Image 1 (tube, rainbow, N blue to C red):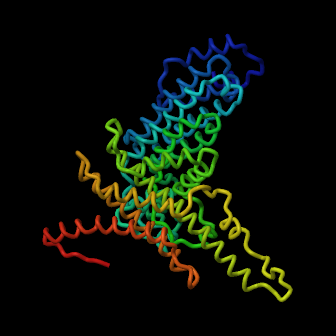
Image 2 (image 1 turned 90 degrees about the vertical axis):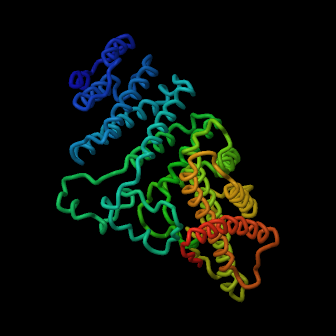
Image 3 (image 1 turned 30 degrees about the vertical axis):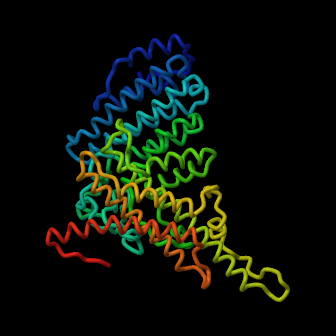
Length: 446
């Protein structure tokens, strides 16, 4: 069928397409015949451009096939890395074809908003399954990338790397060198987060703002999974030519959402996920992970504001000492990226540094006083990571303060918020020290 339809030059009517499409209904994905079926379906629909009358059943069929291919990919029974890479390719092929169908404006116009959102939720479900897989073992990636090993913070408990997406040529293992034909090992979350972001990018304009309540938690959870130590706050950040990681890509997409027309809605959703879970129906296993991603997002927003302040202060100093006797600016060769950092188009208007600091303080206080009903050990682990992220955020704030010009102090409100946050962090550390002493363990303080 694939060869026939690929060479067929005539035009098929809707009735003919429906008749031939019925041959694919009620089929499931099989590793041996799945790709030939997909090839035939693509040829019949002209690459997804001629799907009048079969849009909904076609989407349903592709979701069924994609789930079957993903189940095979996640099964763990692949005999070698080559077979695993082949199964990964099958998932990518199906996702690409599904996206090509919905990228056609005429086809997308005949699909309801609910059906479009259901496809996104379907990908979110697959991504959620992928995120439950533990990070790759150190044996798969024994040496960290150079840009992670230097000038970065190292908060205790924060995941430093997932594996393949931060791979550097100098960290290739002996096994991969001796077997160049074998594909590199990839975590399932790396595959699904790319598919999810690509599909979200193509469909976001067609979705109503109400779906942000489903989109943001997925992005926050993925960000928590891929979170790595951040470098010191600096106006020089971003000048390196290191390829963007998945964490960078997720954060970039979050920046677009928060600086877009629905930024206020995004901030309201972020505020809810910064706090401990209160809804009985919420998944209590996932909630603290989403909260960790929310704190990383808040930290990135605060760091962006700190970089903006530092860049503007640097430009003011540079221009003030470069004025000639004529009074005209004598230093006009300011770097473009520095100017863009000082007046970024992605600034979150209406949320100043003090308001964000209050948000952090309120969140830290809520988590310090939070006691889960069950799964206390798991919550304590995630709680430690959240406190680490908050402590690193405070370090970023005080670093910017240390780099200010002499005589430029914190205003009273800013200092009050910073002090209140430090008190909450100290109240969290004190009980841990007391318990440690009771257990007879040595206490090390910095």
